[in-house]
Length: 292
Image 1: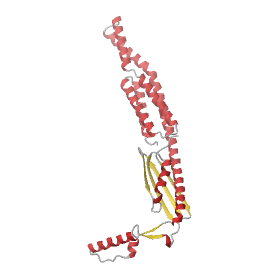
Image 2: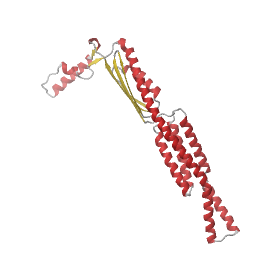
Image 3: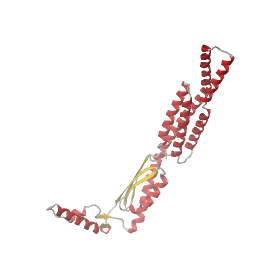
Image 4: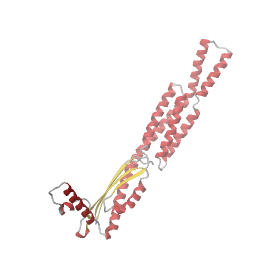
């Protein structure tokens, strides 16, 4: 069954070291591209996170947000970045001096600056944190996959219906082709009878004109190729594979063949079916852009 590229998944995992929340969204994209935002405590596990993502998503634009809320922070879990604090101190003093500001730089002001104070799990909790992260991430990805498959099922039904519509229209065109030639013959006979009268020589000329018309308007090869493309399209739909790019290519070929059919045909009824098929193929090409 095909899978949509659009989806959303969210999961929370509460454990001894706190709570991890994961949100993941995917959108249409020609290739696979992931944007991952992790809190400082989770950043060491970025490679493990990306491997889990890649197992579930093979094509599309992916956004991942992870939030980590420690259950409690003890005094020995607090880290002060003294080098960063020193840089802040010198920077604030230089600004104070440059603009001749009367305010004093205080410790309380600097402690709230980004990155000065941080909490991190103890070394012995790293394994626990990674396990909790993987659990939350896999739950979110499972939710995402379920949504993508559900939308993929809807796409499958829609595309299958459009393929059937095209097959019906193709059958109508194939039935109309002999009538198109016969109607041309009748018009030509009337024209010859009105202008020249019927005689053996003119009848030969009539047959030549009809044969030439039939040759110029022969769409049997195009119809055969189009039918083959339609069958191939349905076959790929039925397979459980990454089908988006393949389906888009087949739809392009279908469009090329029906354009040729339209260019060769002069019958109004055939032209009507050609327009219908073009419309269905255009809708198909829009839909396959959302398939992984």
